Image 1 (cartoon, rainbow, N blue to C red):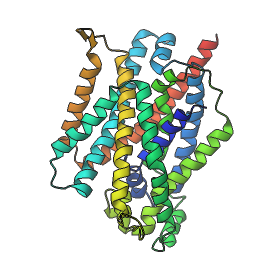
Image 2: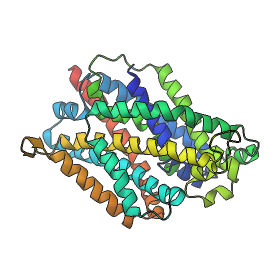
Image 3: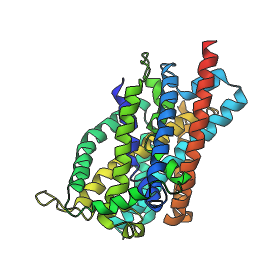
Length: 363
């Protein structure tokens, strides 16, 4: 299987820290969060198996080409436009969250508008690149960041200040009333396969169907990743104390020390690593959304240059900047929870739609 597909899956597992997944899970830590996580994982793996295998049956084609070929024009245009908006929302949430993190942990005196322009300029330039170039950038960032992030996770697990008793309290509440918000947040870690909607265009050779053992492997890795995101902050800050933090993992990273490292405070390393993860995650999401929306919008050229992608990206930038002022951290968090729930519905619809299309293609 193409290594870039693995990169897309891993990306979302890492980005969940910035996408407020730990915050949502921690909010429901005493409301059956463990069972909610397993339900979210099971649903995501089902969607993963069906959607990815369905896309692989159409080598070299993206979701826009497939949807247009097998559904009515009115449905294809409406569906693709809405799905494209979802990808842009995902990119916007990560951008807005990391802008706030930057202002809180790196430079509180920096202008929020300047910070937004800085991140948006990088993300928008990346979104306008060719699809294969975004994958090259993703590979570079993951090769550099992944070993260091794993090292930080291992360092945090074997720290004597980690309270395993606090984690046991969460397990004791495993079968309390579950929350749909927790299910949605847990499922977010696995949705990297949805990037196949555009990146399948690059997989021109026929790909063998994903086997169950691969799905199980992804499930194990993803589940460990989710429980790490949930339990380690609780182990450091306590069952009650963790509820006071807006960004649990960044506050937890500040409690970890590298005694013999070139930088003692892990927070600085963690922030640098997640700047790269946040930017590439927002870039991949916005590029996917751009390509999908571009497929349903009319062409608009000036001096033989296609301007529609630039117009769409400028609109995305304007909406993101406006959202920064009208969606403060609390409202953004509530909006993100609604978005996670919406992803479950979108995932279910996309799954059934691809099953129907594959059956129709066989006929």
